[in-house]
Length: 452
Ligand SMILES: [Zn+2]
Image 1 (spheres, rainbow, N blue to C red):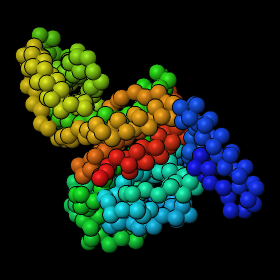
Image 2: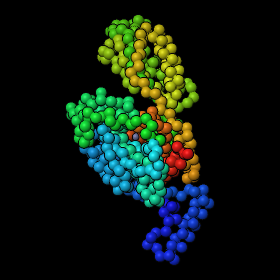
Image 3: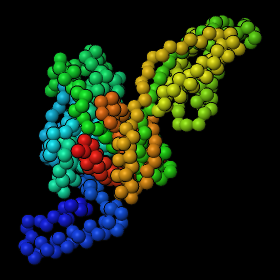
Image 4: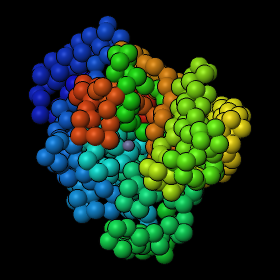
């Protein structure tokens, strides 16, 4: 129920019923105060209906959706979402990177409060990743409209282009362009059909020559908020309702080559081998050990191994493997890497091989703004919801925009921690809770930021 709506007598009421309406409103207010203000303002049923409708675009027989960025299915879903935005009274525009913005004016000349997510998916993904944050944002606007609530800051709902990135191999494409991290160099990237990103932007109705017009100028945003499913098991397993994201972890990747000596597998005695695969196998376990050695939520992975020449009767002479480390603290990543290199050197000696590694990817952690985090925490508590502070191990659009404005993210539980799979699911009550927290956070930020 919307409390402010309840407090406002409808014009169709006569004078007598108006008195009754006011009385009912006061009763509702008292009840809400008694329960710690825990009633939801947002309309959970309307939100669920819209999410179910959106999940029809690209639905798979096994459940979930395949709705790749820059596909016809996603184009149709974009039209559906833009229609919802227009129905909610938002002034809709699409920027040169295909990002969709829906604006609701504020009462003062202030920077914009921006919030939203994405609607593209991975192949055979779930129907909650991105969609919850996008339609949750539109639900916030409708709730404000229902209660005729105005804000000092202008509000904008955003749908970022191609967050997942399988189509062109570029994640967080739209937000990356908006943040100034990506530029015209990406326009020539070709997809499997041989079409370039420039071709696809034209299909979105955009002129690729103006891609950099999509950059958001520093100072124009008051804050960026994103509601998202956790995509991991922590909230679900601990039965905590809201995750307050401390930041999006940084990531560093190296490509390593272990060089030994390819030789006859039948005639080379065991003590005279320079087996690059045996060394790489030790290296893989060293990565796991070092990452597990210290407390914390850091993760480390060796995603594959390519052994050459790759025959059953030849000792592998060369192995290529990547090392990926992720943590919220870049210093932890560096420290772990130092230890890993020491272990690699030890293995090299033991196995008679040489291992060399080079950095191939380095993404700095994107920290949430501490004051935005406390606003989210307070918003959850005022709704009577439990919270936990946590890092995000996955990449998000909000991380890119954190370079321009204070950032905050709200997580809701993912059943069994499953995501990027058809089984991805978040309870409707959790989705509604997260959206209510987004609603309350926006109002709190509107009050607190740029206060005179
Ligand atoms: Zn997502």
